[in-house]
Image 1: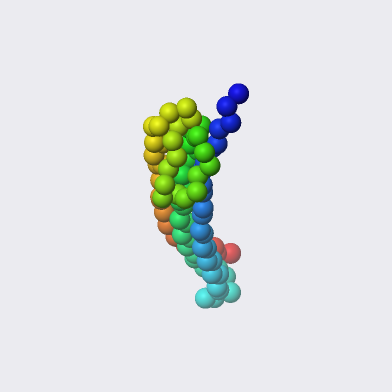
Image 2: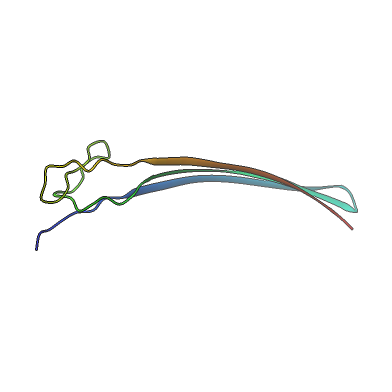
Length: 86
C-alpha cells in the first residue's frame, strides 16, 4: 500500500450589523446588513508528498503530473429593512 497525501484549505470572514429604533411609540424600524467573503481550495487528488505552500502544488501519486489547485473566491453582500407597527 502506497502512502498518499491530501490537501484542502478554506477560510471565511463575516461581518453583520443590525440596528433597531422607534421613531414613535407605535412604530419600530429595524435595518441591517451583512458581508461574507469565502476562499477555498477543494481537496486534491492523492499526492506523492505533503504540500509545503499553497503557491506550489504537488504531484499526483505515482506520477510526475502536477495537481494544479483550483482556488475559489466569492463574496455575499446583503441588506434588509423592516417596519413593524402596532
